[in-house]
Length: 168
Length: 108
Image (cartoon, rainbow over all chains, first blue to last red; front, side, top):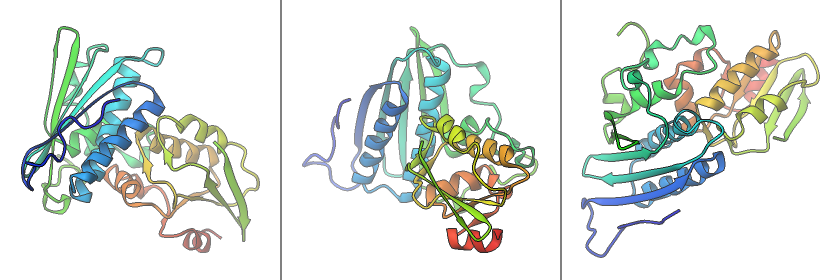
């Protein structure tokens, strides 16, 4: 695993762009270690707690999905992650060399589609991702899947009610 | 995964020797929660659990179903864990308590 690429340099005044990237190989403990490193980065950048929480939830789901579906249970492979912090948002890219994701990855079920009373044991992962991020994009080129999205600093309480249940 | 459980009034309070219920331990968590002694309500102490991902959430739901008709109570959710339950609205299907003590009071 690599450390910060360009973090808190002398010219990194408050509000300046900050960038962090790492690469790791899939595996449950490796995912944990990567999450720990990424969250430490956001904490070091003094990101709002709300955003750090959302980032941990989203990154865990993204990594688990790559591990379980792109590479599959029996294989492992590399994941590349980058964080770019701008004034009001965090731009995230995640790339892997696994299987191509399904077509409906971006427009699939969201949190409002979950029926808690049915006691589902799955289907939460991508719903959480879709509801917590903005600008979700995916493209595949030369056998590599590139996922990108942003996490904004807008507090949840003043965001549109994407996921408060009921009909969309 | 190792569990510590103790009987308090009629409730079995279960504490996990873990800090996360995630994809790495979801299966082990489900296995460990099988065959808990007694037949009263179960209060799962989550005060030291800092993170639950979708696999962990699914495992907790599976444990809840497996325990039925025993009721599974959740106590002491930390902020990120609370957020996962709230976002998925799975907080509506579990009795959730601010502390283990509150869970025991309600469940016993």
